[in-house]
Amino acid sequence: MALQCGIVGLPNVGKSTLFNCLSNAKAQAANFPFCTIEPNVGVITVPDERLNKLAELVNPKQIVPTTVEIVDIAGLVKGASKGEGLGNKFLANIRETDAILHVLRCFENENITHVDGTINPVRDKEIIDTELQLKDLETVESRINKVQKQAQTGGDKQAKMVYDILVRYREALLQGKSARTVELDKAERPFVKDLYLLTDKPVMYICNVDEASAAKGNAFVEAVREAVKEENAEILVVAAATEADIAELETYDERQMFLEEAGLTESGVARLIRSAYKLLNLQTYFTAGVQEVRAWTFHQGWKAPQCAGVIHTDFEKGFIRAEVIKYDDFVSLGSEAACKEAGKMAVEGKEYVVQDGDIMHFRFNV
Image (cartoon, rainbow, N blue to C red; front, side):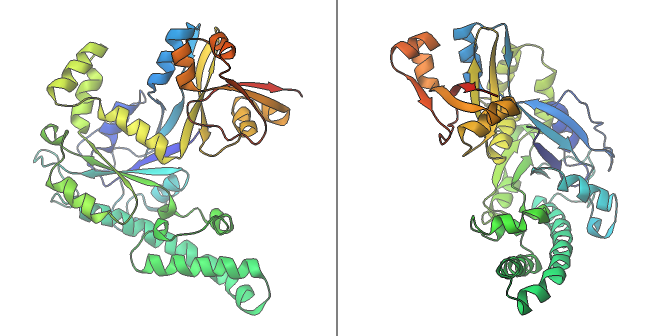
């Protein structure tokens, strides 16, 4: 399941530095706009202590974590929706991602130039929001032109529903609001899924601060919090330069010591990856055996056959049942055999909704 989060932001806000911390695929980090011309893709391991704990108990031959793809997208400038800078190429790269990680510069540093000359993360956010909203408005108005006549003159109920949703989108976008602020119910969403609106994607704002502000934030961060309070968006405070220093340390103990001295309990990168995973509405189930202890990614709310299909499509097609052990039961009792003996292994059918942390064994026949 290759799901992508795209890192976006104005030039010189710390996107590539952050990407370098996240991934072994090194983007060029330089003090000038557009140092990232092609989107760099990194496959990022999702940190999960549960996987390590299961491995301790099972002692498998290999451990396989789950992953998320992070895409570092070239910096955007004002006028991108009209083709300025990298323009439409930038917007196309965002359209291909599943969620947006929007990096905002929340630090002063006279040695790193800002494309607009001054530090104002709320203004920077609004510049990118405006470009994405203008592109979405173009998409929405194009679709309105196609369905308006059918919706207003015919008896096509579906066309009428689509038209009504599009009008709500247009009104929001014209007011400078993102498409994600328009509330749609479950029945409506499938009818406009194929619009792939840029501002309808889930977003997390990453406030890139200096080292002194890494633990508690600063006035720039508070201004961002106030600006996005109605968006239902996550905010994460990270010191990208500090994370780069941490990434250079060779051992776990050295990294922990660095974090303690900085007043942090864990790295911002670890928090960011977990938050990105959550932003994509993803959860994890595990398979645990002597050959392999592995984490598998699934969408929250998926039923057992769908989750079986993550391993192989044959598992979903020929699904018979799932044997399920809860993570806490496995850890407290210490093994699959002990869980069976204690009656802690449940046998579930096709309607079982898989829960985060479930340890699964699928029975199938093709």
